[in-house]
Image (cartoon, rainbow, N blue to C red):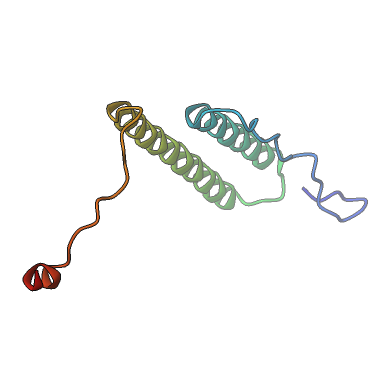
Length: 114
């Protein structure tokens, strides 16, 4: 938003929220991002509603774009949670002390020479 007195953009309308703590799990981080996306979406809707010098068509276009961005973030976070669940499930299948060192394979040309 531009202040009529200073002609500079106001940063009070949309502030960068705090980052999630470093020790949160990927699932908690996804929830945090989804909440942040929702908060930013609501802020944009409020600011557009307060604007009196934008044409209705422009406002509607901006609101549709903001809504789509929110949906994209939400879908990405849901996909991330599903992938994280799959990773956790695979980790649970591997024994704790399993030797995951790759076994050297003989090259087919070396097998013929032996």
